[in-house]
Length: 262
Length: 281
Ligand SMILES: Nc1ncnc2c1ncn2[C@@H]1O[C@H](COP(=O)(O)OP(=O)(O)OP(=O)(O)O)[C@@H](O)[C@H]1O
Ligand SMILES: [Mg+2]
View: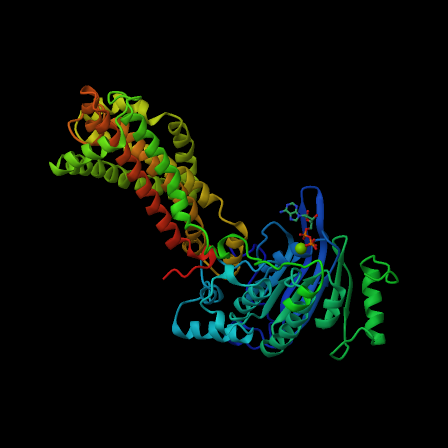
């Protein structure tokens, strides 16, 4: 069910030494898509996408609504079986969806370690993952009692406790208020520095992409129309000229007139 | 903003407790239970008054006091307890069989494609047959002992449990199933962690329907070819025009219905504690 036709386990160069625990070494590809196509009925949503993501690389995927960002992410997650082309992704991968998707009938900690064994060691890892996202006290809470931001942090803990080589994030902060989103950005950056997964972050938000990403790609008309490294030091305030130039370029690539703010 | 600054402005703004309903203190009012009891009590009083005044005679409808007296007499001879016990045993046995069958069928049809193909259409057809219409057949099959009553209850409770549990299994949030899949749950894990817990609420709805159906079926089934049970008591009372005994038996049926409803609500509080974040312990 999880394995997709062409989706195979960990990709590794032939001469590379075997990676410990299924995690490819730094710099190694954790996702490679070649000529990826996906159609729904008559509509070709992905019309030949080539994409590579390395370990320790934070890639932001921008695109207008309905351009197929979620479709691409679901394919990489192994949740879509009906694509053409080759998709190879690391076996150790986690997803954070737009909604938290916690099991409402399980408390927070069992949600975090869902699908893992229930040994004391695993539970302890779950607890420290919760502590990492600042929710150590909520281990026994019901998901229904969490705020939106808290629930999404639990979802992040659930993704990270698996030590993924590839972390797929589908607009994880879309439903959060601006202040919470900023906090989540800082948290995510800190966690990614520590765990160093390859990240694909799907977002509508150009500023979010600029704040977080090492590389930004834009999906339009079923193809990747822009793919460039950000290469700016953190933090990246909008007052910075290079940041503003990148922002305009991205907005233009998205078909938004950058002179009209928003 | 303090209350003082509000008060100094004219016209004065009155601040009231924001929480409506549950949280609002009701010190000066009658407790809700007292207010809710007032309606039925009034009804009883009118009923008694009509009887005492001779407007409604005993053969039409005995007044509450007579009903209580009849209850007392039957209880003191042990007759009432015996009939009650017999009825209760029939309902519980029938329910046990029906609920088990309903859940088992729902699991087969809900979790396996072949199960749905084989079972669902057949069960949907059978469901359309009114259970009480089966009474003559059931008597031919099982005679006139305990079995036909138990069988009728079992048949009548299988369907509501099946229909609601099946729908709940099929209606489980696909996004949660998808999330479970990405986090490495196997098919069995998905059933255990996602599908079954998600179907509990639907099962309880079915159980509630089943309990109502069970008593309804029992009332009718026990009035035919029986020598024991509450229905038999009613039937006998009809022969002697003892409306007090009839009303008594009906009241007991009502109480049993309330009791079983309370049982389901208890189960809901226990099993669905996560819904409102209540402690389940
Ligand atoms: N299961 C499906 N069946 C039919 N069409 C689909 C399905 N999933 C997606 N689509 C279509 O594919 C297109 C791309 O959808 P997708 O969800 O990938 O967009 P998106 O870029 O994630 O948009 P958004 O930013 O609004 O989330 C849409 O036009 C959508 O209607
Ligand atoms: Mg999307």
